[in-house]
Image 1: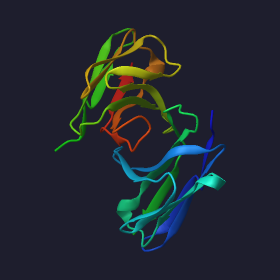
Image 2: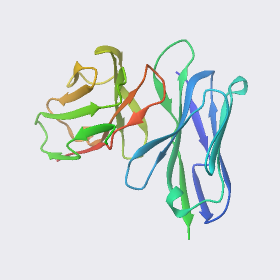
Image 3: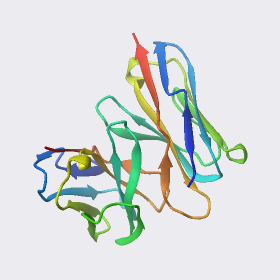
Image 4: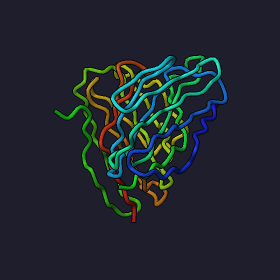
Length: 110
Length: 112
């Protein structure tokens, strides 16, 4: 099956800083998604981004499908951005199964 | 309005017992899933149903049995619970297989 590698595994920021989280896939994927798991455990879908760039407020994501990676940008970070960010994708060939990375744990300090 | 709901939120039980977790979605999605998140936060799919039909059944012990009475519900029944079953179980739904998934709040299962 496909391997999903996220970097960095841990990230500590001061409020107001910008950051970039990366997700690499071992093979081509469909249906790439980014999720945020807040400190209370809730998983929120941030982006469905199989290719291209999308923006939602202070967050944006870019997927370069041909090079098998995706980036999540967080600008002007806030303490509420803390949590674990996961990317997930489905192997091409129609497995219809999302495979998750191990996540990036982000801590934003006031 | 809760999009994907699960009950119960917490479940503490003894080894060997049988328990069920219920999931309902009001998004009108065709596909529903069960995921397991272990103590290291790793998320892994267990089952997926599309229009009430099982389409993904990962390597999960047959003590775990999903049931989808209709498109809006996907329940998980676990027989003969073991210590290693302790985890957070998430239900999710999407418009179709693999598409943008929306997760429920999770059920934290603790087996003593």
